[in-house]
Amino acid sequence: MPVLPVEAYTSQEWYNLEMEHIFGNTWQFAGLIEDVANPGDFVTVQCGSQNIMVVKGKDQRLRAFHNICRHKGTQLLRSAGKAKTAITCPYHAWTYSLQGELQSVPDEEKQFPNLDKKKFCLHKAQVETWRGMVFVHPDPKAEPLHEFLCGFENYISPYHKPEELQELTAFKQEHVIHANWKLVAENYMDVYHLNHLHSKTLFMFNHDKASFGYAGPHYTFVEPVHEKDYEKRINNQPISKIKGVDSTLVYVPMIFPNIGLAESQTNWSTFHIIPLAPNKCKVVLRTKVQPMSTSETIKNIPKFIRSYFGFLQLQKLKDGDPMESYDFVLEDNYACEQQQKALQSKMFSVGASAEVTEAQCRQYQQIIKDFVEGNRHLHKERIVMREFQY
Ligand code: FES
Ligand SMILES: [Fe+2]
Image (cartoon, rainbow, N blue to C red):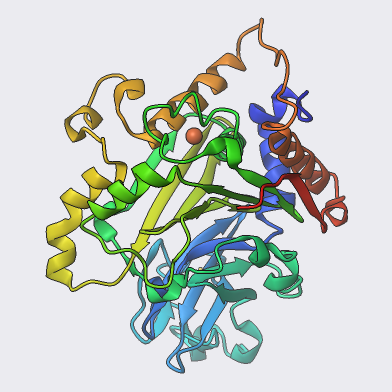
C-alpha cells in the first residue's frame, strides 16, 4: 500500500518540505554541457527556494553561484543565455566577473566610500559534470556527485557516450502537467502500466523481462526489445544507430529525485521533471543522437519523429483523445492528470498495489518520506526488485 498520504500530492506544506529537503539539498540537473560550451554561457536552475546559476569562465571552467546580487539580492541572470564578459545586476548595476568577484559599483566613491569589494563576491554553489550533463548543488560543502550517485553508473548503459552525441533540438519537448511532480516520477518507473496504457505505443519492448531496482535513491531499469519487430523498426530509421551500442537492451533509469534517462540503440534522452506547484509540474525532454551534418539532421527530423514511434500519426497529436494519440508521452501525461483529479475525490483510496511491478513506486515514496524526515542516510545500498539475465 502507498507509503505517502494523499496530502503529499496536494498540500503546500508537503511541497515546501520537499523543496527544502530534496530539491534544495540534493544534486540537481541544470542542463547539458553544450548549453554552457563557451565563455560567458550560463544556465540557471531552481533548487527548492534557491536559484543557482552556472557560468562558463574565460578559463573554460564552469562555476556555480547563488543567483542573488550581494547588494540587495536581486536575481542576476535569468533563464539561460550568454553573459558578455561580466554579470551586471539589473537593479543598480553592481557588476561581477565571470569568476564571481565584485568588480564595480556605480557611484562607489561617493555612496560607498568604505566598501571592501573583496568581501562581496557571489556566494558559491557546487557544479559537476557527468556523462555530458551539468549538475549543481546549492551547498558548497555537500557530498561530491559521485558519492550521491551511490554506484548508479554501474546499472545504466555501458555503451552510450552522451557527451559525443548531438542534440536533436527540434525534438525538444516541454509539457506542463496538472499533476504533482511525484505522480509523474512514479509513473515513469511504474512497470505495471507498460503492457496496458502503452499497449499501442511501447509494444516493441519486452516489459515482462524488465529488470529494475535501486542504487541508493536512484532507480535502475533495463529491458530487452522484442528482437524481430525492433530490427525492422531500426532499419527504417533515418537516424543512424549510435556507434558502439551493440546491445538491444533499453535502459530507462532515474536519478533521484527527478531526472529520467532513456538510452536506446538510436537515442539518448533526458526526462526532467520540474515541480511548479503541489498540483502542477513541467517535463522537459531532450534527445541526443549520433552526430550528423546539420542539413542532414534538419531533413531527417520529420521522418525521424514518425519513425521514432514507427506508428505515430502526427495529425492526431494536435487535438483529440490523448489515448488515441499514439504518443506514449501524452498517454502518460493523461494518466498522471487523471490520478491528480482522483486524489480530490472523497471516495479515493488505493485499493491494492502490485507485489513486484509497483514495488519500486512504494520504495520511491519511502525514499521521499525519509529524505523529508532527515533520514536520507538509510538510502545508500543497492536493492534488486526483479532481475533477469539477458
Ligand atoms: S540589488 Fe543588485 S545592484 Fe542593487
Ligand atoms: Fe508510461
